Image (cartoon, rainbow, N blue to C red):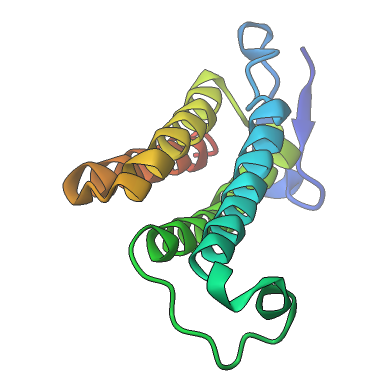
Length: 155
Protein backbone atom coordinates (compact mmCIF):
# COMPACT_ATOMS: atom_id res chain seq x y z
CA UNK A 1 0.00 0.00 0.00
CA UNK A 2 1.19 3.52 -0.58
CA UNK A 3 2.74 5.54 2.16
CA UNK A 4 0.80 8.67 2.99
CA UNK A 5 2.44 11.70 4.51
CA UNK A 6 0.76 13.86 7.08
CA UNK A 7 0.02 17.28 5.58
CA UNK A 8 2.88 19.69 6.19
CA UNK A 9 5.04 17.07 7.92
CA UNK A 10 6.60 15.21 4.98
CA UNK A 11 9.87 17.08 5.29
CA UNK A 12 10.12 16.12 8.98
CA UNK A 13 9.75 12.41 8.27
CA UNK A 14 6.35 11.87 9.94
CA UNK A 15 4.64 9.12 8.00
CA UNK A 16 2.01 6.50 8.62
CA UNK A 17 1.31 3.47 6.52
CA UNK A 18 -1.89 1.57 5.91
CA UNK A 19 -0.79 -2.04 6.21
CA UNK A 20 -2.94 -4.75 4.60
CA UNK A 21 -2.87 -6.95 7.72
CA UNK A 22 -4.36 -4.10 9.77
CA UNK A 23 -7.13 -3.14 7.36
CA UNK A 24 -10.55 -3.47 8.91
CA UNK A 25 -9.21 -3.39 12.48
CA UNK A 26 -10.01 0.21 13.25
CA UNK A 27 -12.25 0.63 16.29
CA UNK A 28 -15.72 -0.42 15.24
CA UNK A 29 -18.00 2.66 15.04
CA UNK A 30 -20.87 0.57 16.34
CA UNK A 31 -19.03 0.43 19.69
CA UNK A 32 -19.20 4.22 19.85
CA UNK A 33 -22.88 4.14 18.92
CA UNK A 34 -23.75 1.44 21.50
CA UNK A 35 -21.78 3.31 24.15
CA UNK A 36 -23.87 6.41 23.36
CA UNK A 37 -27.05 4.32 23.60
CA UNK A 38 -25.88 2.93 26.95
CA UNK A 39 -25.23 6.48 28.17
CA UNK A 40 -28.72 7.58 27.13
CA UNK A 41 -30.33 4.56 28.79
CA UNK A 42 -28.39 5.21 32.00
CA UNK A 43 -29.46 8.87 32.09
CA UNK A 44 -33.07 7.95 31.32
CA UNK A 45 -33.10 5.20 33.94
CA UNK A 46 -31.64 7.54 36.55
CA UNK A 47 -34.45 10.01 35.84
CA UNK A 48 -37.10 7.33 36.10
CA UNK A 49 -35.66 5.96 39.33
CA UNK A 50 -35.60 9.47 40.79
CA UNK A 51 -39.19 9.97 39.63
CA UNK A 52 -40.23 6.84 41.51
CA UNK A 53 -38.44 8.19 44.60
CA UNK A 54 -40.33 11.47 44.23
CA UNK A 55 -43.71 9.87 43.45
CA UNK A 56 -45.42 11.41 46.49
CA UNK A 57 -44.48 14.83 45.14
CA UNK A 58 -45.95 13.95 41.74
CA UNK A 59 -45.18 14.39 38.07
CA UNK A 60 -45.32 18.18 38.38
CA UNK A 61 -42.18 18.02 40.51
CA UNK A 62 -40.33 16.00 37.88
CA UNK A 63 -41.34 18.41 35.13
CA UNK A 64 -40.60 21.51 37.21
CA UNK A 65 -37.35 23.14 38.25
CA UNK A 66 -36.89 20.76 41.20
CA UNK A 67 -35.49 23.49 43.39
CA UNK A 68 -37.30 22.41 46.54
CA UNK A 69 -37.23 18.62 46.40
CA UNK A 70 -35.54 16.19 48.70
CA UNK A 71 -32.24 14.77 47.51
CA UNK A 72 -32.69 11.25 46.22
CA UNK A 73 -31.25 8.48 48.37
CA UNK A 74 -30.05 4.94 47.89
CA UNK A 75 -30.67 3.51 44.44
CA UNK A 76 -31.74 6.86 42.96
CA UNK A 77 -28.47 8.54 43.98
CA UNK A 78 -26.40 5.61 42.74
CA UNK A 79 -28.23 5.66 39.39
CA UNK A 80 -27.64 9.40 39.12
CA UNK A 81 -23.92 9.10 39.95
CA UNK A 82 -23.47 6.15 37.56
CA UNK A 83 -25.05 8.16 34.74
CA UNK A 84 -22.90 11.21 35.51
CA UNK A 85 -19.78 9.03 35.57
CA UNK A 86 -20.72 7.49 32.22
CA UNK A 87 -21.09 10.94 30.67
CA UNK A 88 -17.63 11.92 31.97
CA UNK A 89 -16.09 8.74 30.58
CA UNK A 90 -17.88 9.11 27.24
CA UNK A 91 -16.13 12.44 26.74
CA UNK A 92 -12.74 10.71 26.99
CA UNK A 93 -13.82 7.67 24.99
CA UNK A 94 -15.31 9.74 22.19
CA UNK A 95 -12.26 12.01 21.96
CA UNK A 96 -9.81 9.11 21.78
CA UNK A 97 -12.07 7.14 19.44
CA UNK A 98 -12.29 10.12 17.07
CA UNK A 99 -8.54 10.74 17.22
CA UNK A 100 -7.79 7.11 16.37
CA UNK A 101 -10.45 6.95 13.68
CA UNK A 102 -9.54 10.19 11.91
CA UNK A 103 -5.80 9.59 12.13
CA UNK A 104 -6.19 6.25 10.39
CA UNK A 105 -3.70 4.74 12.84
CA UNK A 106 -6.05 2.35 14.57
CA UNK A 107 -5.19 -1.30 14.79
CA UNK A 108 -6.48 -4.45 16.44
CA UNK A 109 -5.37 -3.07 19.82
CA UNK A 110 -7.57 -0.01 19.33
CA UNK A 111 -10.53 -2.21 18.49
CA UNK A 112 -9.92 -4.37 21.56
CA UNK A 113 -9.67 -1.23 23.68
CA UNK A 114 -13.01 0.08 22.41
CA UNK A 115 -14.59 -3.32 22.98
CA UNK A 116 -13.14 -3.49 26.49
CA UNK A 117 -14.48 -0.02 27.28
CA UNK A 118 -18.01 -0.87 26.16
CA UNK A 119 -18.31 -4.19 28.00
CA UNK A 120 -16.70 -2.87 31.19
CA UNK A 121 -19.10 0.06 31.22
CA UNK A 122 -22.08 -2.18 30.52
CA UNK A 123 -21.19 -4.40 33.49
CA UNK A 124 -20.26 -1.36 35.61
CA UNK A 125 -23.82 -0.03 35.57
CA UNK A 126 -25.66 -2.84 37.41
CA UNK A 127 -22.69 -3.28 39.74
CA UNK A 128 -22.90 0.42 40.67
CA UNK A 129 -26.68 0.21 41.11
CA UNK A 130 -26.20 -2.80 43.39
CA UNK A 131 -23.74 -0.78 45.49
CA UNK A 132 -20.71 -3.08 45.13
CA UNK A 133 -17.84 -0.60 45.68
CA UNK A 134 -14.57 -2.42 44.86
CA UNK A 135 -15.89 -4.28 41.84
CA UNK A 136 -17.35 -1.01 40.56
CA UNK A 137 -13.96 0.69 40.82
CA UNK A 138 -12.26 -2.26 39.16
CA UNK A 139 -14.66 -2.12 36.22
CA UNK A 140 -14.08 1.62 35.90
CA UNK A 141 -10.33 0.92 35.76
CA UNK A 142 -10.85 -1.74 33.06
CA UNK A 143 -12.76 0.80 30.95
CA UNK A 144 -9.94 3.32 31.41
CA UNK A 145 -7.43 0.67 30.31
CA UNK A 146 -9.56 0.24 27.18
CA UNK A 147 -9.29 3.95 26.45
CA UNK A 148 -5.54 3.74 27.07
CA UNK A 149 -5.22 0.83 24.63
CA UNK A 150 -6.94 2.92 21.99
CA UNK A 151 -4.65 5.89 22.64
CA UNK A 152 -1.52 3.74 22.61
CA UNK A 153 -2.45 2.39 19.18
CA UNK A 154 -1.55 5.82 17.79
CA UNK A 155 2.01 5.71 19.09
